[in-house]
Length: 114
Image 1 (spheres, helix red, strand yellow):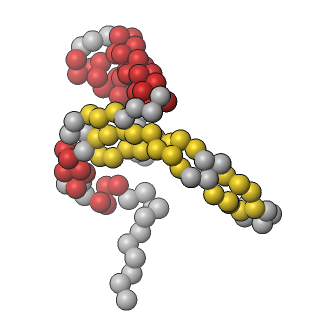
Image 2 (cartoon, one colour):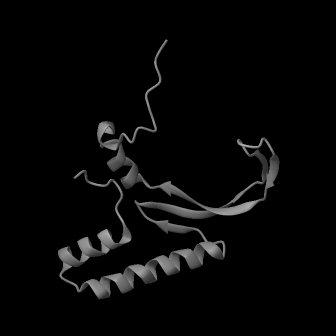
């Protein structure tokens, strides 16, 4: 069976529990609270900085008009607040060291050089 390339919150909780010896339920509680706090900070417009890892910040995405490809009908997409993530130095360095063939998901292909 092929291994999924998606790591879930449960996977992370399990890994932390195994590595630390702390019971799964306690780790789950801490991870859940962490996500609650991160969401809460973003919702009130605060920027979250995790040194070396990256920065989460709420950003306004301007509204635009879009088109339904099936019907051709145009409609307005309203302004929205979204969360942006900017990777930090350590994360960037670690990602640059990754072999791109490991990540290839079929969505990004090299463009032919003419």
